[in-house]
Amino acid sequence: MEVTTLSILLLILIGLFIGNRITKALVDRVGTERKIPENRIEYVTKSIQILWVFLGILVAIALTGSNIKDVGVLIGSSLAFLGVALFAQWSLLSNATASIIVFFFFPYRAGNWVEIIDGENTVIGKIKEISLFHVIMIDEDGATVTYPNSLVFQKAVRITRKKPARKSSADDNQKDNKATP
Image (cartoon, rainbow, N blue to C red; front, side, top):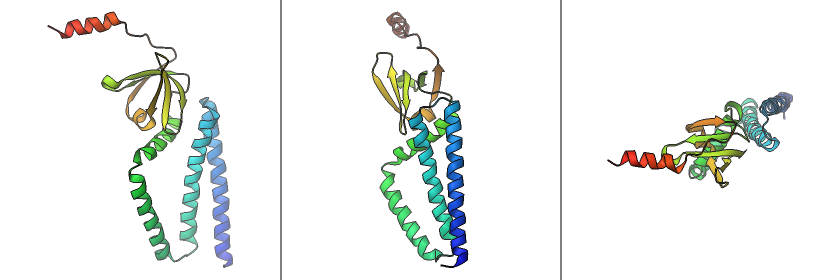
């Protein structure tokens, strides 16, 4: 290998190292400020670091002057294979992506009582954990409810610090009586 190629690869490795350190520091800071559980901080960090490595590999291939046509065919074929393989699992990818977005931009966390407003499928519960794919809640009756991150990201969520007042059966009967003429 030429000295310039080695220099480029070394700079890319240094860039990846620095980028990973900055990513870890940013995610740790946001996680600490928002009092997010350590395991959630860890998998968000790992997910972003994997993207850094993939980007570094692409940059290394492009900058080292490799025969880009051969590499392009390899990458294109690999992406086509992954696209077909993952098409059936698109919801997993959307949930993982939504998990990262929820980590940085959503105001709720474990311990909050939330109401995910979804028409007749509205869910009320206390958040136990926000994992890579689901928000795990304990509902008013003590049952465990899992709700996909991608749907939480799309629905309106009402956040409270305490358990919402449960609707009584008298309220339900009034609704039923009003509905029938």
